[in-house]
Image 1 (cartoon, rainbow, N blue to C red):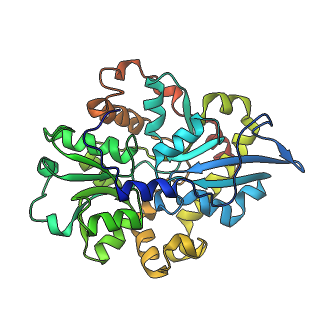
Image 2: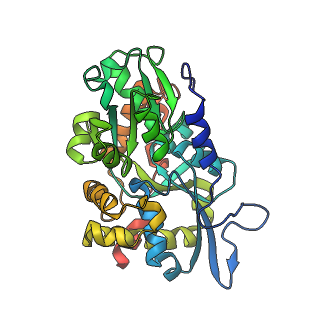
Image 3: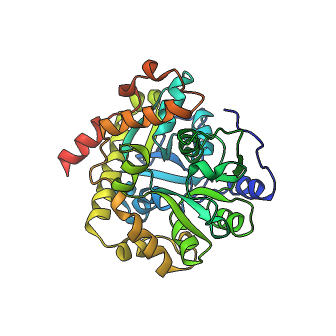
Length: 354
């Protein structure tokens, strides 16, 4: 994918540095089987497109609740600053699975690779397009992005895809604005405060932090079903657990264990308050501010599914959105087989067993 005038200065460097962080240990898929046993326990490494992002909270929460261990799976969670980087780790064979956006499965099918979502955490993006406080009077819609600097987590990320969609719908091309790799979290906040970006797409707790600091305000809010339907014309299944189709077919028992654990976590999210959920998360993932994190969790908690199942109409809407603006899918929508981009067979069994 080509975007114009990419900014690769300090903002991008900071995000790239974060890409090497391993939260719970390193594991590389090599000659040993990816579901190798350690004392009878399956070993799986999952790359997360930002462990501190609330949209991907089920990954760490499942670990904290001990649900992976209960299923007999030794899961190592690694982190990358964006979903695109996490996807690259999967394609390179460095990990067995990714917690990232479902839309990557469609884009990669257009490129001849088969990825499959096996647990759908959310049917909305859980993101918002934020406008810097100093630009609030000049950026009122996507049409106002001309001549501006638009932040995304990284090129080829879901924030990049959606930014292209909003601007294209408004008649603005990628040549009309500068795409900036702004990363996430404090990197994104700093970029917005210091004028590195005029607007940008991000997630909670970054959204709530910017609002509380009065450093940015929401332009498009896709943390709720209503906001997502308004912005994208329908649901947009996003945060998910996805793997290569080959891995899913060859390791069904391990995949089922992961699905069992994640579906149980989704039930926990549904049945507990934001404060109770926040209390289970590691302190360093909450940015040292429990109150702010709980507030952000409360704003985003409703986006998670209760059963991990894909919304079929939502999957079709993702394809509609991507094929409108994404270069990899323009003119190829009819060639994409959605049935190969996700499966509910594992969550169906997990749900019936609960």
